[in-house]
Length: 258
Image (cartoon, rainbow, N blue to C red; front, top):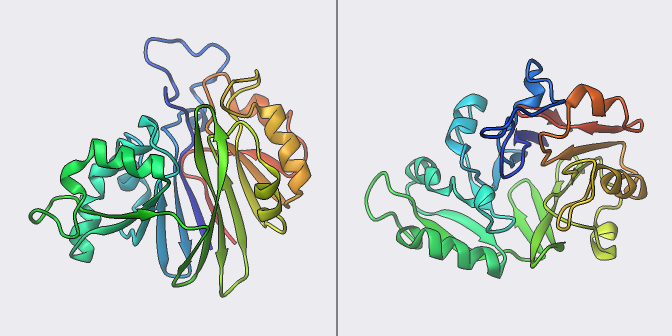
């Protein structure tokens, strides 16, 4: 299994517009964060999770050349507004790209991209989304993707667990959530890597703080946990020193191979 952190920032990005980002050392490239999106490879199957506004530049920077399936965790702007750039991958496969989301996510996709809700592109070079409801377990060549609802303010996001058939490796991706319910905790058991929302040091009404994320990570007990969706309050070098063993801050462009 391959895991690529394409973007690890929040809806505002880091550095933030018209803000000096005090305490966040911008000479450290790990503190320059585009908004959240992830790329997973199960054997030869490429799965893109979310497409932030910087999605096109993330693809170029990380040399993304294949996307077989797309999963939207939820319909907030910082996760959906790059989806039009999936048009290039529609060209590659010669038709609509399979897109899975929750009912909330599907409704938002249809509202933002009505022209793409079709089985074939309107013409070459256009986006087309073959959209369907994300099932509790999606079987793919190379493995399975499980989904579970996570609380995120007024909506629920999709928590995702990836299992690769050939290696048996397991990765948990629980981003944009205020807590991790018991069902999601059970689904995470035995994970090799866990990726959690760890927005900032202070509490937030719809996201886990760093402290809350650390508590969840220690309950799950994976060998490696990475915190993502980080604000400009989180200086990488400063906060990495404060984290327990086995828990790390992610950064844009980080690649893991399991």
